[in-house]
Image (cartoon, rainbow, N blue to C red; front, side):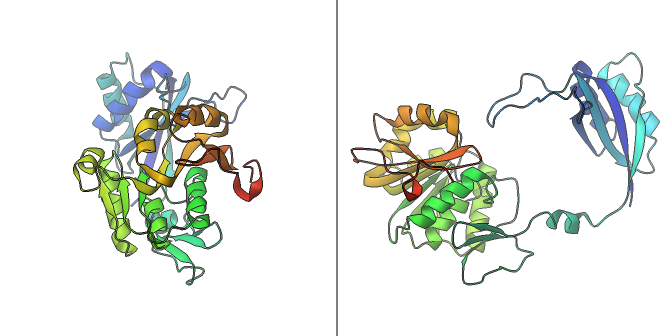
Length: 317
């Protein structure tokens, strides 16, 4: 089977409405791009993670709609223009999309990821490069966390460098459950994962089952109501974003047992001081390591001063 892309260049104020209208008129999928991409007029739209853009499209937008090859593309565009309330159907061009083995093509983009000294994250369609390593079988999906992002990598490296056999671990904002699984495979005792996204919880449960890891996963309300609700943990790791991390400072700090460790990531290097300041009344945090502009902060409950950075450095990698 083959498809035809319909390409329409249009002003920002009409891009979102036309996109929705194209889907209603029969398009299989629609994306919006910067029509000036690659030129001197290209403009960034999105800020740092967690920020909602003020505009939903670019001043000079390109709307790309995927249709079946046999569809009447002109009719689809005309119908969409009418639905969107445009005075007339916009000009458009088309581009053929050849058939392909999309599953194989997608899988080829994801190779095993080596993290730290001895961790491999391996998609299910690959053989583990080192069967004696700590192997996590995780397929890319909707839940965040395959180890490819610097913040996930930093947390995994901290857990590997500080194994806690038999100790309790809380992974708050667990996403795919990858950090909880690393802790469990490093012989932690009771491990709990929490996430606000129910889809992430389902993904994490499937990943844990696939990797033979006994972990309890909850959405926040169920976590509070569970047997773990009033429990403190020897290690608490939270890989989220700076704004929610600051808001959760009293709660996350209160989940750390006396002498236990708190590890935070999802924090840009320029945000480290303000995040540490939010936790200062509870736990003194310092930068443990930095990677690609992101940092991992670490502190110990009851410690008088911030812990040293990895390898005794200032946190740079």
